[in-house]
Image 1 (cartoon, rainbow, N blue to C red):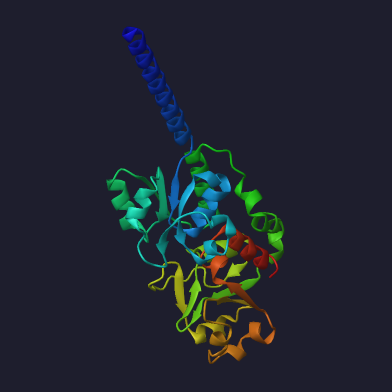
Image 2: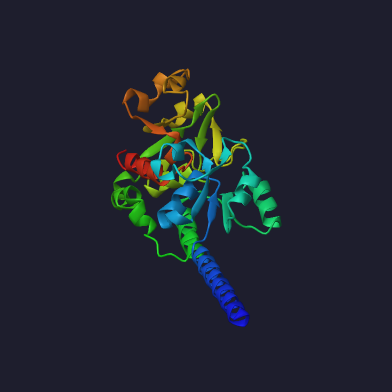
Length: 285
């Protein structure tokens, strides 16, 4: 009798053990199916979310993402221009962390040394964005919509881009100093994509901001841009540009060819919605 009871106990223990092992293996396999990604920029958060919402486990504390309800439940790993919280990132057990080249070099290097795969991105054109989009989709092993489908305002409106050919333009990012993007910036590339003639495209004087050059009031008077884009940044409006002493002598001002753009979308790509909006406005010039 004791032997029979002992056998029953052993059998029950064995069943429970096997059941636990199978469940653990199933859960492990399920976890392995989902690649966990932490992004340190709003644009890469947008891209990952577009391709595989379940894979996005950490995002930056960007104002753009905070406005979007889709990201409400995703943990925030950084705030403003402060370095990301590495302990928080590690607690999320990511398979991949994506950051911006130059800005996130140190945290990415540290995470890499701890055995976390990282990806450093540099986006200065739609081609760069397309390559990154495909790269993320490949890492996730997902079939994603094409960038042309996602950024319809950029590609569909761009079919009529030849109508803009030879229209010259200048973009003013600030008034003191007068900063403007050349061809090595995201803004410069997006403008040329629409066949608009950026008068500052070939200028290469040195500033602390890569892809941006200093212009003088005299230069603006000499080249008289037909169209001027002014950038609206937090806490500023067109009045900062109106304070430039030669403002009212510019033909674009006289002809009311002044266009106001948001900072995100044209200067800082920011996110997919912001890029679409910038493309839509560029196509209307």
